[in-house]
Image (cartoon, rainbow, N blue to C red; front, top):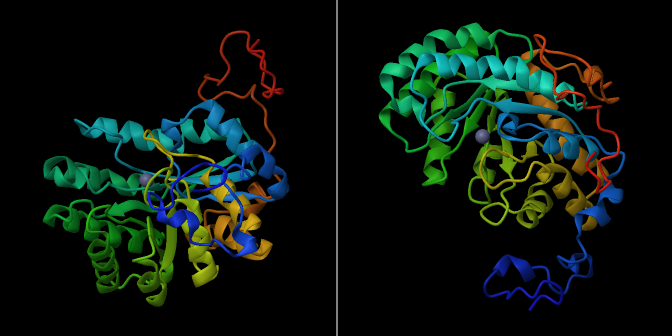
Amino acid sequence: MCRSCQQNPHLNPSHFEGAGDPALEVTHQDLQWNDYRSSISGMRFFDPHVHMVSRTTDDYQAMYDAGIVALIEPSFWVGQPRTGLSTFKDYYNSLIGWERFRSSQFGIRHYCTIGLNSREANNEVLAEQVMEILPLYAYKEGVVGIGEIGFDDQTALEEKYYRAQLELAKSARLPVQVHTPHRDKKRGTERSMSIALEHGVDPGWVVIDHNNEETVKSVLDQGFWAAFTIYPFTKMGNERMVKVVEQYGSERIMINSAADWGISDPLAVPKTAALMKARGISDEAIRKVTYQNAIDAFALSGQIDVADFEQGKDIDQNQKFFGNSILRGGQQPRVARNSIFIS
Ligand SMILES: [Zn+2]
């Protein structure tokens, strides 16, 4: 039994794998986020996969407070099927427009990747129409890749539109952000990589996302970037992530939250940095997997200038986007968010 959180190691086998190693004798209770924030203060983070359109202003504020200076919002499945082309257009417009503005109002530089997600690739009539408009967005400012694309159920239509979008990435000279399936992940990951190679895409331009211990070795061995999503309660928790970095080092590995409309944590990147620090991973390795590697991969687009965010961004919440601001009537820009009074 964990002396702090009373978890039974038989129910959670990962929980006690490090027992006996003094460096790992940190209990869940010891690792309260507020206590550990000071250990990473001054560090900067880049979350290369987070769906801010589904998140609140509180999330933006908390991300900024935790040191996230820039992020990438991939195009994704919004939780229910879209019924027509115009909802795709509006969504892409929000990624390069309103959401980028909203992010700027919290001091975070916002980039995005544009793509047709794998689930909706299965609606062929609509997918054909979406493919026609994608080039209009791929060349826009702040678009740092084609993504997230790849496989979900591993159907023939998913493959067809994955291939078509690899060609688009090549002609637009953009990196590719590949979503790997949650079911039959190993096969889907291998298939995603071999198709990219078949299309002549340089693996150094491809970020394979949602890796786990089963897929990481092959991804790195073949020269791709390996991204890891930290999921609360399931799959890839951050204790497992620390072990991956201990085993494979910090080259070509990056960490993201993939926070969206489901149960997810937009602070997954800084929290994992704090846990890595507590477990004795070097500051330089932490910097690479939570900041620099994502920048190096997506800067291949020519769209990332670190001068835009490395010193933090000026925040002026009085700014407007097409006449609309994030402030409601009479509101003042927030400054003291730790107060319990809401005034
Ligand atoms: Zn995603």
